[in-house]
Image (cartoon, rainbow, N blue to C red; front, side):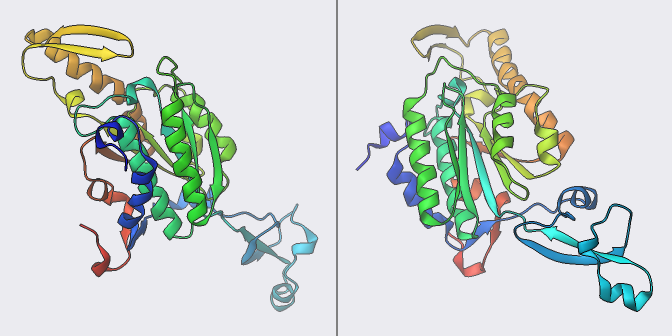
Length: 308
């Protein structure tokens, strides 16, 4: 049995697996994309593996002759061509932030552990909905990737990777979000969803978020700790970052104000871009109950199946 104190600092595989029980009766909801986005990204006239007939329309120069709809052409007396819609891949990619700022927490567990727990629950929910699940890690010197796979086996591959990445990271290595999203673009296929789990401190601009939002359903799970939202009661506190120890006097009003402002400013860049691009943001505290906190992402399957 894993040690609860250790689990607060490093994620435990057995806990991530146990979260499968919380996925009973729910699935991940999908964002209703605007008509403009759908017109540009949800249909295609290219014939390939896994396509469905969508409609016929008047022939236009450049349309392939082999896609001519001869029945409609004969009926209307005007040349028509068939349009096909690509089979969109039902898969989910989890992008998990392992930068040094995530290795922090004063309530229940570190942000990195809560991110792993949230990623695990989302993976189980996606799998229950028939989606394949993959993951990538960024920051902390980790650049691991798990390509999307289906079923319980696919989820377990992701959970083992989350556990291994958390234990292997280097707290001196920082990776900006832009680089992580550039890597994600190589893994994403049309129709896949992207969930970014981060505290936002690594956000930088420019980054590929606008391009990703144009082609995918993107969600941000923003990790927070209570001490980042408000300074502790007045007093002198010893803070540790890696091997560095520093005494901070929170009795100084200026220190208290600067403390809260610094954390708020660190998240502002990512939050501002999410608002601009209409990306869903779910704020997740380190001591939050996962099922309740992630409720905006869930679609209830049946009323009697809700887990409290």
